[in-house]
Image (cartoon, rainbow, N blue to C red; front, side, top):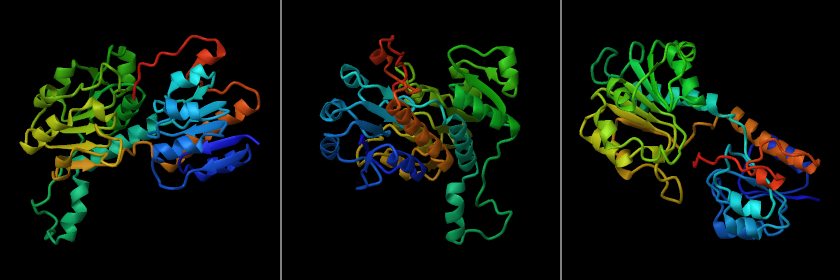
Length: 339
């Protein structure tokens, strides 16, 4: 039987499908990354590897696996897999189509609402007995309608976010490499293009939605943050490396912006993953654990697509989402997105 290895628990609906395909091994030691040395040992006799984000299938893992035939990732670009090592072994690496854009846009809007309405502190406010009467000024929030949302990176996620925001009577301004056509802007609630500096100066809320590339790494630092209104809120559901957390913390501590909602962080590896320690101390920051695609329905769709690629491969068909087409004698894909 074909030996299939999964390094972390995945949705049960995908497990049931995989069990029909071969001898399935799933690491259940922790609900998180398997220790690297254990991973190297575990893959030595495996033919198909099921890859997940934050679990590095590096060269050592790929070279240890054998007789390796396929790596199928529950991840759009399989950035945690060493594509070159797989290609040298003539092993296809499969990713996913963009299942997560609507889910992440929905979450981004939820994080925006939670930050503007200060929902993180509302429960503790009540628990501490501070709620004395409903029109007290002791606890106040910020409404969204009538305000301006600036979206940095108007790709799939940013576009879905714009539609949701426009439906709630927010004005939409955006920045991307090239402006949309007037018809496209109209379809997104009358979105208007802005230079990046103008967007940060004008917006009441700034949502970071770009892909992480060489050009967006470190994009938002002290200079852009300094342009924001004192009443403005910054939301990041893109990648942590897009934002300078130290500059953000300084602006929050000094009251130069109102608040922030962060789902991604500069440090997302190892036991110390998470935000800068100082951000935990600030009451005007909502922090969530990189959960933009954690809707159970979305995660099941992602896992099943990775399984479907395995099914096709075992049936002698080309998988749908091959990221290293060189193994089929084709030109390499553009790997501009790096995270």
